[in-house]
Each structure stands twice: as structure tokens, then as C-alpha cells.
Image (cartoon, rainbow, N blue to C red; front, side, top):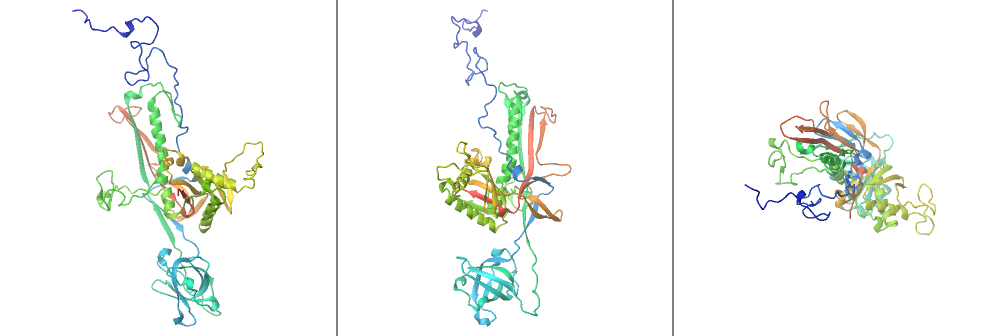
Amino acid sequence: MGFNNNSQFPASLKPAPNQMALRDNYLDFTGTAGGSFAQQYLPELYEAEVERYGNRTIGGFLRMVGAEMPMTSDQVVWSEQNRLHIAYRNNTAEPQAAQGGNVNCSVTLNLTDAGATKGAVRVGQTILMSDKATGLIIQKALVQDVRGTDSEILDCLIYGGGALDAALQVTAGVQLFVYGSDFGKGTVGMNGSIEPQFTQYSNSPIILKDNFQINGSDTAQIGWVEVATEDGQSGYLWYLKSESETRLRFEDYLETAMVEAEFMKPTDVYDSGKFFDFGTNPVAAGTAANAGEIKGSEGLFAAIEDRGNVYSGFAGAASPGSGALSDFDEILKQLDKQGAIEENMLFLSRSTALDFDDMVAAVNGSYASTQSVSYGLFENDGDMALNFGFSGFRRGSYDFYKTDWKYLNDISLRGLSKEIDGVMIPAGTTTVYDQMLGSNIRRPFLHVRYRASETEDRRMKSWITGSVGGAYTDTLDAMTVSFLSERCLVTQAANNFVLFKGA
């Protein structure tokens, strides 16, 4: 039987009168239908990928401001000192003429706002009262008697022989603090003593996981694109790039999760009173079946919003000079009320960093003149290229060091949102009481705790399973690279932190 008349000759046997690319002898290199590397005329190929986004990782923030330390429990607990002096806000004062010449006013302390269960003011102490509305009306008094179930009522004699000012006779309208004591000759000493209290905080680690998988055939597949990644991987095996990017992405998550983590609350997900358990359906909180519940953790932003200072709508470039400086001075006044830590670091978005540059430049003496600008470590000469950026400055008794935070600028991360403009973090360490060691220890204000013991280190685990790539653990013709970490962030003395938010 002969050949079918409709059979086609191979393309290589079909002659062409001219040396040119025709439909019969050309395969589209970039086309999706039938495209391949083979074509008659070889294009000029750039084997290396173009790094159009530069270094894409955003890690390094926590390494700059803190440390990483192991822990061996499901919870880390620390205590922070309370203030040394005694003060109460939103108290109620009223005249008390009925009790005779020794007492002419009584003050009911607001223990709820103070977070106390019992009053700490004693007989013989002297107090200064001011009105809540303006803070300009003040009177000083001597405590003659302390009564009430929780020692919350103070019977006082006002110095100067005057009556209680009308501006102080407002419900929850008096602020007061103890400034000393006043005793007569031959009297007994102070009655009772004050036991210091501490405020306890805790955080729980979260478990982060990720993995990358590739079949055995593709591990032996050579590509024409040269792999070059941020962690140094190179070659023509494409899976090296995939594995490397999975690892880099996971390492970034180790940091961003510590910044963004939130505690899970029963009303946040699914039905009220239920948590989410990856192993089962949502189950009632507190039951035995809920042992593996996702509790969440407290990240940096959550800690500052809960226990720190939040400033919204920094004036910056919208009101350069006095407007921005006035806003910044408000922040300094708030720092004065807290720990007054001298050195602080500012991690800012690009727009807020420029706002700070404009603020500092606006107060320069030559800012509005035609003369050369004089700020900087060395005075700028008119022939020099001017440096309009500031890496640090001093205002009042505080030093500030400023840097851009890539996390807030990257459009695939917080740059996608305008909520957070920056964060101010105190430099140095703080002293806290460690309940495990039973002594005071010094720790950076911000640090990461990860689970570890003599036999297990969960700071950053990675392992290979399968039957490819040197691992022979099962019959699956693939290589699986798994990543795991268990960690939490400890934000100590959050009252010294400032979170900048959009207006």
C-alpha cells in the first residue's frame, strides 16, 4: 500500500526560494501557542533577570532595635514598675463645713481610673488639687482623716484658711497629687506604709509555617534564565529561585508578623464565643476540644495602641515650620510625662520622613533667605550640593535619629495603606523583674522571644522531605522544603513609644 496523497513532508524538506522566515519554517519564540526556544534566527537573549524592584526583602527592623532570646514556655510574663509618686485623676471634692474648723473639704478619690483597689493617701500628707478643665485653679490642703471602705475619702484642711474654690466643686473635676507631709511637734510618725505594686503584662508566641514543593523531574530541568536572588542563589535551575523566594518571604513574615500580630477575641471570627481551630470546626472557647485554639499574639502596633502613645495627623509638609514644630512639641510634652528617655529612633514612611526634613529645615536661620543654607554638621558652601535630608536632630532635651522604614513604603506591604506613618522607639534598655530568674534584668525595650530548649530550636527551622534533593523519607517523587518558627514580641515600657497615624 502506498503513501497517502494527503501526507505532508516535514518542514525541513520543503524548499523556499529565498532565505527568510516563513510560516512553514518559523516557530514563534514568545507565542503561547506552540512557542518554544527553537526558531530559525536566534534572538539576543539576556539570561539574567532584571532586578526592577531592587532588594525586595524588608527585614532588619527588629535586628536594629532589639534582640532575640529563647524561651521555654507557652507564655512570657514580665512586670513593669508603676510611678513613684501618688496622684489621682477625676476626683470629686466638696465643702465639709459641718465637721468643724479642722476640716473644710472632703475629696473622694477615683480609684477606678487609678487602677487601684484602695487609696494610698495617709493622714498628715499634703496634697495639691487643681481643676481638670484648665489646670490653673489650685489649692493645697492637709489630710486630717482618711475614711471609707477603701480609704478613698480624704477629709482635708485647706491651707491659707480659705474655702474650697468653686472651680473644684465639679463632679470628677479635680486632679491631685501628694507633695509632702506636715506634722506638729511631739506627734507620732506616719500611720501605715505604702506597699509598691507592679503592673504585669504577658504575650504568647504564634507558630508560623510555610513550604515549597517541586517534583523530581523539574529539579533536573535546565532553564535559560539565570537565577540570582537576594540570598545568593545562582544557576539555571528555576526551582532554586522558587525555593529561595519562599525562604526570603518567610523570613520577612517573621518580622512583619511581630509588627502586626493581634490577639484573637471570641467576637472577631465566626460565631460569638468561638475561636478558630485549624484541626476542627469552630468550637466553644474553654472546652477540652479547644486546646489547639489560635490565640494570636500582641504585635508592636497593637502594644503601642493599647499601652503607648498614638499621634494622628502630624502637620509636616502641610504646615511646614511652626505648624509641624508645634505638633512635634506636643509629642515632647507627652514624653516628659512618661519615661523621658533621651535618645529615640524614628522609623518613618517616606512622606513623614520628608515632613520631618521640612520641619527641621524650616527653623534654620537661612531657610527663607537667598543665602546658602547653614544647617548640618558642616556649614554648606554655596558651591556645594545641598543636603536637605536629616538623619538626626535635637529638640529640647531629646535626641532623635531618623530613618526610612521600607515596610511602610513597599506598595505590596504597608505602603498599600496610609494608616501608619511611622513609629518612635526609645533607644537603650530597660530594667524589669524576671519571674523565672527571680531578679531584675536588663532587656532592650523591644525584643523577640522564640521557643527553644536543649533538644529543639524553633527560632527558624527548615527541613527537606520527599525522595528528591538528598532526602529519602517517603515514596513521593518530589522535594518539599518546610519552614517553621514559634515566636512573639515583647514590647516593654510601651508608654515611651509613639505611633504616628494618618489623620
